[in-house]
Image (cartoon, rainbow, N blue to C red; front, side, top):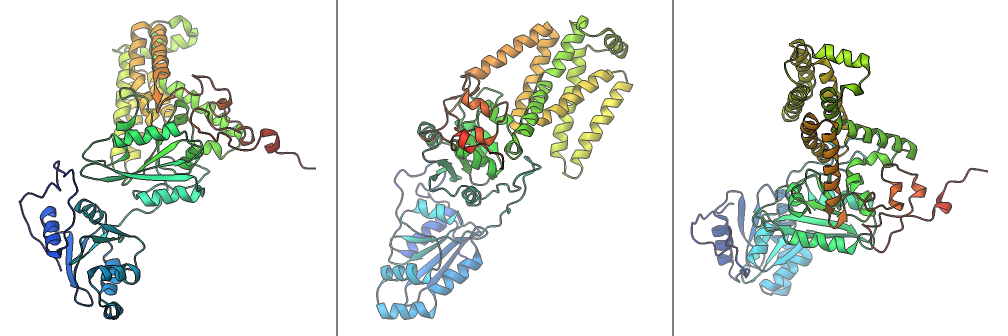
Length: 525
């Protein structure tokens, strides 16, 4: 049974930007409470109001949101039990009023794991629109919110953005409690803390922070709480909102908040003393503080042997250098510093550029822009044809441009190598930063040659040293230099040598494991 009542009357400060300062309490009259619910919600079609009469003649009503609450759960565990013969016999034995009926409902009838008493309409509407079922009784000035959430959600699956060869295949989903459970399953410590707050005047999105008590730095945890509590916005729809609102430096291409879909990455970062921020409705979890080297480390680095991980990291750093500097170095050398090239290579490049109507800078700029457009098109197109469009489009356009005499073959090689190198970044946000910086460096190279590249590099380094992420220097452990933390920066030493956690991010418990001598593997006898 549905019940509607549309009204354009004032909604007692319960909607829009006129939210009341003092929450409006529920009335003891069932009719008044139902009228208020209908009035405030404006007769929404998905709000189901089911008036019932409990055993013993007590008038009541069940209110839930269709699609958010499990209707089967509501029918079996609330309606059936509330109106059963057992409830009638219990009422006849007690012969009491509404308050006693509520007590019996709570103890014997409502077989729901999560029950909450709500006394104000603001809490009632939040519970109702979160998928809970509201039980209202005549003569009672509060309601029962029963946990009956049952919307359709995406199950735990493999991530598409952070694939690994070796390691867990699980990824976060859009459900907050599923995500917290994935972390709890990996860290079974009672020191793992979880705090949840609602952010967004209209969306009232659940935002949780998780940290290890005693391992995380108390000042960082308090700073995270403060920044989240200072957010005043109408809605939070994705963790990107939170990321932009809490980061230290707004005008920087470099990310200062790490995001990931992998529960194992979050668990590892929590054990390092960092703080995780989970937002309901998104699989991307935030980690703070996030220093520069964090974006160059992959989860798989810790699942291989240290020598293999170190080699992969070195290759990754080489790829980063190529992605950032290769086009600008080509432009600078071919434009200003031809004497640096071997004679045979110089002659070959000169022969390729014969008949090219554009300078090297314009060549590089056109090819880079064309590749970025193809890359974006490949991401936005349907998954079945997106990769084919990006790969085939790059090959066809590159070859056609060379045949038409618009660009040289060497420029196609430079841009292709740069594009491939840009995919070595474990974190997509850092790859975007390098993509943005590549174009200014090309402009400096075209204007001042290698001196322009050096000038741009100095500017980048100075900017990096000025950045902070929740009070932690962005270039830690290089600036300031922390020798102990160098064991897991560019190189990754064996686990038995990394006995301490990062010094600037941990609290009182900075020891990761037992001393190295005792932990070092010993040869068998």
